[in-house]
Image 1 (cartoon, rainbow, N blue to C red):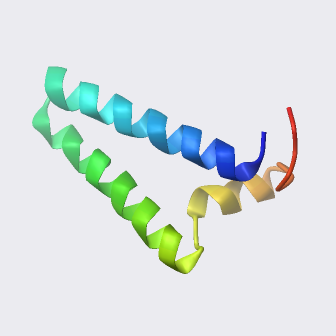
Image 2: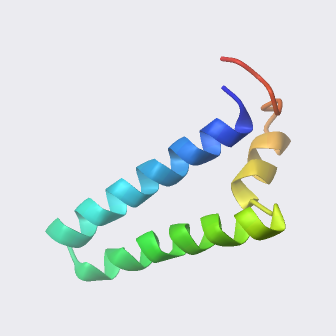
Length: 66
């Protein structure tokens, strides 16, 4: 799986998890949804993605397949 797909899967998981937590635990969890969405938006314009940097540092190759 490539870094791009890992980032998209992680972002989707975080959004769904924070939505569920916001509904069932406390509405402040919606701030996590907003943060992930804002990070996705800024990374589409700037190309800077903290998770992609972390994945490269732990050894995931840009076109790697698991």
